[in-house]
Amino acid sequence: MSEAPNGFAGARAALIGACGELERLLGGLNDSHGKVADEIHLVRKAGKRLRGGLAMVGEPKPCIRWIAVIGKMLGESRDATVRARTWKNLGNEDPAPDSVEAVIGSVLDLESDAARRCPPQAVIDWAKSAVVQVRARLEARGDEEVAESAAEGAAKLRRQLRKRLKRALQRSRNEDFHACRKAAKAWLGGMALVAPDVELPGGQEAERLCNSLGEENDLEVLADWMSKRGFSSATAGAAWKVLRKRQEKVRRRSISLIRKELSPVLKVKG
Image: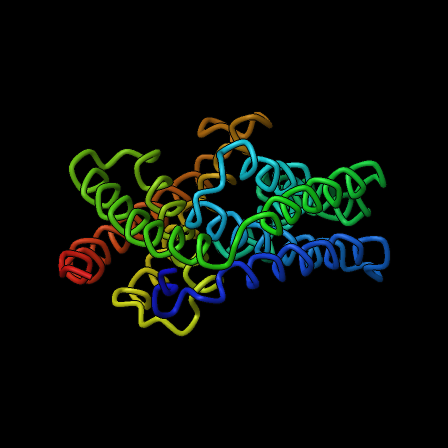
């Protein structure tokens, strides 16, 4: 019988524990004391880490999608809160009365307030049931098998991240940078969960990139919302000018992080 790869021996136990933690957080939505958006943020973060770990140990895509669906079902409340915060961070904290900026801010605040309601019980029940099924799959596997799969999966996710970074620099499309963020989060989240004691070259650089790409995503979500609500450049020209300027600035930062910091580290074999 072979020994488990160094650093990955506790992968199965960690994943099972993560399922239990996600169940606990989901149950806490029933008693969030008015902090629904914050609680949902914790649920989604836990779900993303778990998805990274599941991908790392080779769980099938349908199983991973169950966890992804939980985040999507609960995502609107958090998205509404982030949109309102992003809008204010663009310098719209105290807009002039009767301005279109005041209108946009009031609608964003209204949606953010409405999003603080607890999700329907059916959503929570389904989500908890999905997590229970995922946990059962993990419990049916052996420690060594999961550890070996985790070690192989870690290398695979690292290679996948490298490829997506390269593609983003080559094509510079929004979807490519979004794919970079997903790949980086899967690698970081999976490693933090299944092998927290393993040294992770490029980990800090990947975290910085995730933060930058996260800001890009928040800005794009706000831009999409404004377009769908009819706040076009023709009706809110000044707001769009500020938004696009910030998007360009953050994109330049993301490209610099990829080219100068993360890619050089990931090119080193490991």
